[in-house]
Image (cartoon, rainbow, N blue to C red; front, top):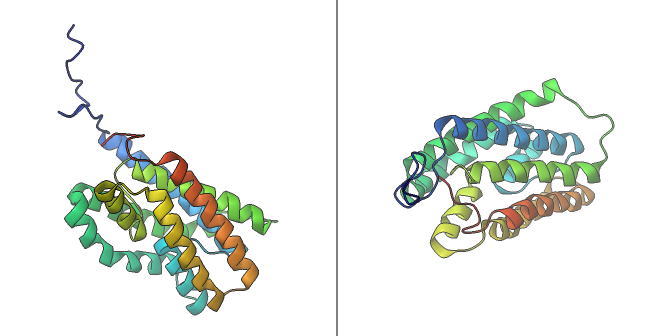
Length: 211
């Protein structure tokens, strides 16, 4: 047998392709992990980074639906994804955002945490969100917004998505001083660090190559 023969699940560059089923499971399970982390943040009165953080800010300031706000904030970023990352990435990202929006609305009706220590909520919630984002990134998807910008810059400039997103997330969380107590902001920063450590350690150029 010729060892150089390409497998059916590899493209002409030798990069393994994910099946449709694998992509679907990654989108479903990745957003489920993120929704659980978001539920922990909501119950503890914390904020995330990225477009989720912006949705949290508006949610706390106006009382509006987090899921609806999150879905709407992401709409302008699909053009950037379509132009730089292709229609497959854009479609999967749209599906992921829709799934997360729906799950984040329904999950608090299905599960609650009593008690929930705020520091634990920040660290574990951030870790769950980071793991969910990592699953999406590895299947060429994201949850929109800053995640799209981070993936574009990593692919085009070689910048680490985790480090870039950490800086942007901490900046967004800092805006929360206007709407929540300083203690909640500091705990949210701890959550953002936990989230982005997952990405910085595991999501590096060339570490995981698949499509």
